[in-house]
Image: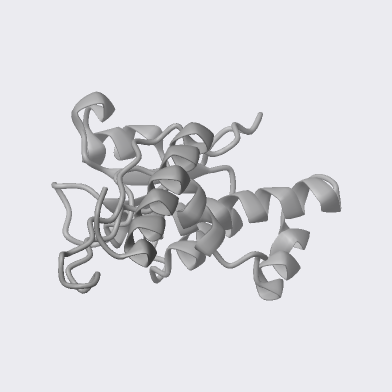
Length: 174
């Protein structure tokens, strides 16, 4: 390696950090390439899932947590469900903005889904909400070959928290 010591040090640091991020997040590592003119020709590396998640708002907005009284169960389980929906929405926002190709999986709930929020699919031009799995699959089709972005929830309250996290206006229920 040759060149200014500061650039060489920065290059080695980036390789090390990218390698560590790859190990921690299980995602491919890439790193910046410094131009020969002192670094102005940098290409930045893609964000890791850990970096994307770290950029999310750290807490669920209070007005969403206030809506937990509408959910059955304990206060703790209701708050956990709202936080889960909001976090899933934040991942959806990251997908919609092109920061990541797919959202992180949400924790499975032992409750039957009743609201299906579809934010993106080839067959519709705007987000929609449906209340049956038949309507959902009619719109989305085969999930194995779909580029859709959607999530199901046991309650409208959680579906609304998801849309808040995704920064998408809650669509009318079909």
